[in-house]
Length: 188
Image (tube, rainbow, N blue to C red; front, side, top):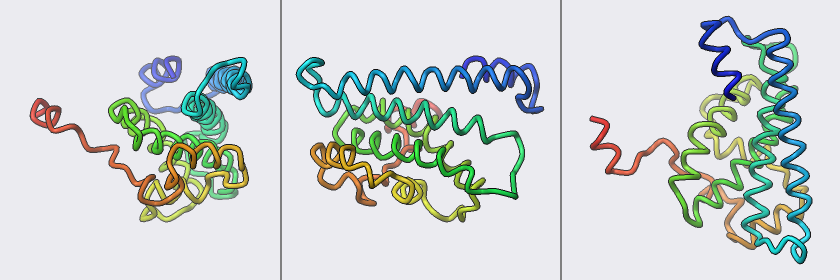
């Protein structure tokens, strides 16, 4: 993300192309692989001494990195009208991250998870949904529920152990744009 932000400042809206774009995709791929390895290690509860929440946090992190990789592979700085389904993997990964982070948000540490959702996950889902030609009127939470991998029974079970309503619209409909009242007064 640092490389991307530096290049964006230097290029002033011309998009990231060539070796820089390939390098960014490569770094996201490598990071997603490392996060997958971490998740695999944490699945051995006896050896790792982790909780279900630890595993969910690692899985959300892995999914957000993988989502970022797929996002960068697909985004070319322009709308692609020939194949909107190419965004499905990006939406699936970011939806996984969003559902997990929304469930963790409901459990506590709201500021941390609100920031992750508001600054990275939700905007990526919104953009990918637009590219996939989903109507803008569909809330991000609904898009996330639609693309969440419900066939991953292990992940579904972990989420439901943490919160039985994890895959409901009410749990995933968190307000990520609202600031705590103390921040609202400071920003005016």
